[in-house]
Picture 1 (cartoon, chains in turn cyan, red):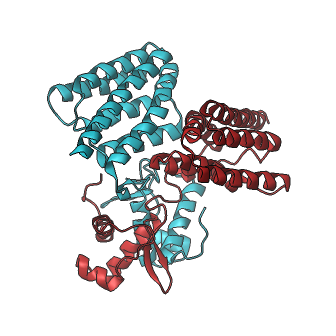
Picture 2 (cartoon, each protein chain N blue to C red):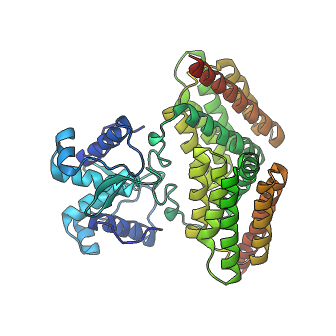
Picture 3 (cartoon, rainbow over the protein chains, first blue to last red):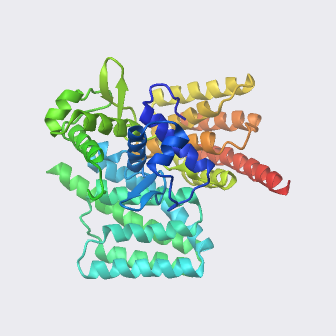
Length: 232
Length: 232
């Protein structure tokens, strides 16, 4: 997608390492050649290799395990903030926009999950559902475990794009636009449970409706909070 | 989202530059301080600053204009391949997965666009629609202009997440999973035109249906091509 124009040598070298990974069919957790070997393979100096590797670490293509070597990262190539939401200035609008996208996508995903979930998927969903419920009841911050519940549902679809998108969008709510202040405790417990049950019963309509209800509770709450804030 | 553990000094410095950008409320095309000034502000050496800037260039946070300085990039923080699709091994599955996501999202977006499009938005959509039509009639490769047509529709929603997601997903079809070989010329012309007209008429139902039809033609074609390939 990018032309070579204007790319520094470390960046060009980073691109070559990516090509090496693809051509050699390396997978998550595979070790890549060491600095010395990469110098040989790519015909550049050691400091360039080191810088290229740092660029790829920052893009979550590689990770360095001290004393062990450099490996292909989990969720290869998906950085911490792939949509650049850290640079959004209006957090209230961001919160509303994220939820609008969730309302479009997640009810359909819940329906797909109900169609496709295996016994193992369902077990995983109930495990995550129970964990969030316990955290809410104990007054703990459940935001990131809540994301894991939604991720588990996304994984049922076996669609790699959906598996990547849902964590990005849902984690963004927790990290960049956490304005709900973890209210809606009862509603979350009830609707999460309804989603999990519908998926376990392979009932796509119920799963879709339960997910819609879950997200609409959130929408009402966000609108209410944002309106309160703007009235002040 | 990331803890500081295991981060190299250039990465930590890159994070600090991001914080500087946010705290100083810098916008797209704003110039950041030069290397010398950044050394002063962040208290690190020049080679560290240079490496940190390269990391941020590779994440599309900054871009360097030779002789002019370093600036905040367009589409700040969204890299070329934010979903890491270059690392997907099964291109046929990727093509199907991308289309499945488009079928979930884009009809809803077309409906939103019909509700919200301004006169200027509509003008823009027809311009892009005409361009793609001409390219198809002239036998040119219209894939990236096709993406621009869908981007123009996404922009009508005024939802920043949708504006970011659609180019990522639609461009991925062109770059990583282009297996349709630009067939469906007539169907593309007809359904694009129907989408544009429905948005211009502020008719969300027609816009949604036209977009659904457009994407289902693509789905049929992809399934047909993949089946042909696997039978061979």
